[in-house]
Image (tube, rainbow, N blue to C red; front, side):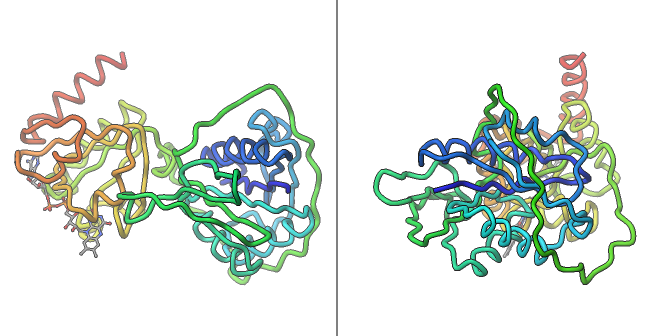
Length: 319
Ligand code: FAD
C-alpha cells in the first residue's frame, strides 16, 4: 500500500486545503504501515521540501508549463500517470473546487472507488471504510471502497493541519502532459481577498441588506476580522455580489470556524452549504427566522442598527 496526495497550488502557492490533505494522508499512510507521498503540478514558488513537515516523505513534481493553469482534464490525465508511475493504492484530494473536478474523472479513468466529502480517517480494521457527509451534511454514511486503487476527497476544514520536524525528498516526475486546448491569455487576480473555501471566518449577507449599496457592513466587518465574504443565492442572482460568493446547496459548501449570517432567512438550501460551520451567528430582525434554529448565537435586530455597533466593537477588540 502507498498513499499519494494531490498538493493543489494557485499562483505557485500551496493551498491551505492541501495542508489538511497532507496531514490526513500522512495519518492514512501510518494506519496502513506505509509512507505518504505528494504530487504537485505546474510551477511553484514555495520550497517543496519544506512540505515534509506535514508528513509527506517524497514530493513528485511535474514541472510542466502546460500545468500552470488549472484544466480538469489535463490535470486528471497527469495525476493518473503519476498514480501509475508511483504505484499508489490510495489517492487523496481535498474536496475543494479543483478536487471536485479531478477526483471523479480520475475515478472513472482508473476504475477506482471514490468517496468524496470524507470527514474522518478511514477505518482499515476490516477493509477500507470511509465516513462521509450525506444529505447536505444532515447525516453520515460509511462507504467501503473495494477497488485496488482507492480515492478519497477530504472535505476542507474537517481535518486539523498537523506539523512535525522533517523535510521531503523532491523528485521531478516526467509524465505525458496533453497540450491545453484552451489558451489562457490573462488571469484576473483578486488581490487581498481571502478565498471563501479556505477562510476560518466568513461574514455573509442576504436579501435583508436590501441592496449592494449596503454591502459595506459585510465587507467592513470581514476586513476587521480577517474574514472572507459570502452571500445567499438571491443576492448573487440579483448581481449584488459575484456568484463565486454564493453558498448553499447550489453554491459553495463551506465549513469555517465562524459563520456570521446577516439578513439571511436560513432556508434549507442555504443551510446545506453552511451547516458544517463550527459556530454560527445569526443577525435577523425576524425572531421567527428559521436560521435561529441552526444558530449558536442569535441577535434579533435590524442589521442597519446592529452592524455598525458590531463593527465598532470588533475594531476595539482587534485594536
Ligand atoms: P430572504 O428569504 O428574502 O430572507 C431575508 C431575511 O432577511 C429574512 O429572514 C428577513 O427577516 C431578514 N431581514 C430583512 N430585513 C432585515 C434587516 N433590516 N435586518 C436584519 N434582517 C433583515 N439559497 C441559497 O442561499 N443558497 C443556495 O445554494 C440555494 N440553492 C437553492 C436551490 C434550489 C433548488 C432552490 C429552490 C432554492 C435555492 N436557494 C438557495 C434559495 C433559498 O430557498 C432561499 O430563497 C434563499 O436562501 C433566501 O435568501 P435570503 O435569506 O437572502 O432572502
